[in-house]
Length: 220
Image (cartoon, rainbow, N blue to C red; front, side, top):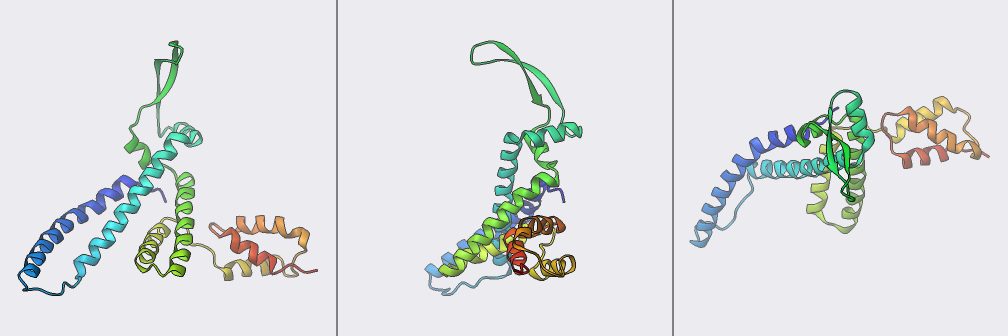
């Protein structure tokens, strides 16, 4: 799935900004009532939860946009791919180098907003996968530390990120594949190649999980 991150940010902002303004006005009224002693407890309503969800999405999308921009400035393979597919075009400009000599350089015609919108899945997916891995690690830390607010935020962001990735294979999926392809198990020497073949058998799978499953079918 190709991700047009700019469009996603626009879409969220369309709902987020009016709701934010509305809630800020309500908050001022509530603060005034509290000062006058006319209001004691402020309860969260449906709009509050919606605003939090939109804030989470907006923050996450901005992080992804930043990562995409970084990829487009440092990943020459990505630029070459987009040029080869005629998605981006180049023109030549004459500039001066550090020794004041004139040299030719290739400049991309399209602006950064356009470039971000056309990053193909094979380049965007690894970025999302890194974020997923980071969120899973954070969730483990926050669960141990009892940081509920941070834990909820990480889980919510992980759920959003997972929307853009193929479904991840479960332990049951991996063990089923191994039992079908290696019914008699494997030897210790076969472990490395088996792990490689198993990872390739799934569109998306955790390497650590594969390693654990493969180790479980090793026989003497």
